[in-house]
Length: 120
Image 1 (cartoon, rainbow, N blue to C red):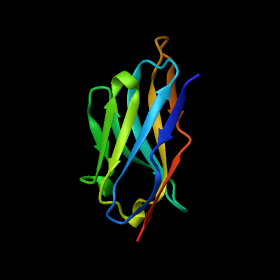
Image 2 (image 1 turned 120 degrees about the vertical axis):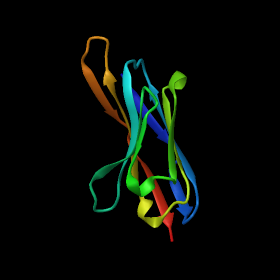
Image 3 (image 1 turned 135 degrees about the vertical axis):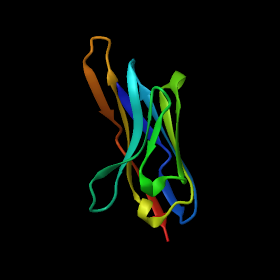
Image 4 (image 1 turned 90 degrees about the vertical axis):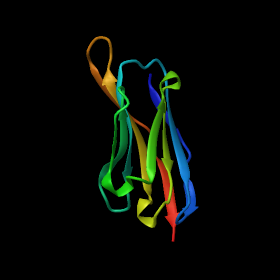
């Protein structure tokens, strides 16, 4: 049973910083990409940042230059360093892990979400 456990959400003032972490527990192999999504009030879920197994990263335009995604492969953990936070960054942030088992069957797991609130 694979679970993604997230930490690090909270309340921060505009311009502040937070670091989110997401650890994949259980026996998980064949990870292709780990990433973070968010869903703001009244909005759909959107990609914030992702990092593939080769180290390539992808960021939403709205967070480029402010957020950094990193990964500790040995710990199956992905981090999101968020700097210069803005009220529009307020959302529930979800961790995502996708890949394939040795059998070739794909998997796609989500964390439970962690609330980030940026006050003006």
